[in-house]
Amino acid sequence: MPGTKISQRIRTLKLARDCAALGARIRTIHHLTGLRPRELLYLLFNAHAQPPCGRAPNSREWYHNANLLQRIEASVVIANFRRMRFLGFPAPEALVGAYRYYQSMHRPPPRISFDRAFDLAAHTEGLWIAKVPSFRLASCARCGSEFLDALGGTDTTARPCPFCQLVDRHARDPRLTASFAEQPPVSEDLIAHLMPVPGSHTEANGETPSTSPSLPAAET
Ligand SMILES: [Zn+2]
Image (cartoon, protein in one colour):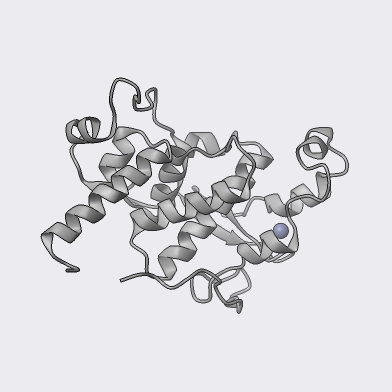
């Protein structure tokens, strides 16, 4: 019964439950599902399971002070979010899928919360809480990875690729060596995961990347 009211309702409730399971604030779930905050509180939480509280993330402020590992993990989330969008997933499902994938790739605790991922995705596509994009995915000419970059003012120079920075700094920085005892995570695996989707954007030199996406096709 796809497209019927009951199917839409089930999809919305499932999405709300998935978001709550990933640690989302009520405000975030409200923006993603359209359900009223009071209803979400009633449906998803009780005396034993309280929603997260505190100030919601502001990524435009955060990004400029984020450390290398935070920028890498933010790039992983948003690169996969954009890939799923390109494959045809609606934005809320793409965000949940990309965040689950990110969680499966990184040791807990995650440096990027689901609320942060929501805020970054919103400000990359100009969705939900953002009228216009303030981030973009840039493509590194050296390693081929996509990384999150701020769109800002008159300064259009891209920040250095955090994946290349990690490779360069891994042997010299004891904090990074402790985080990644063996090989740095910029392995061929990770780079393959982050390979750009054809047509999703254009590289700085004007060429379109040629790598194929590896995620499954969107469900209808
Ligand atoms: Zn790079």
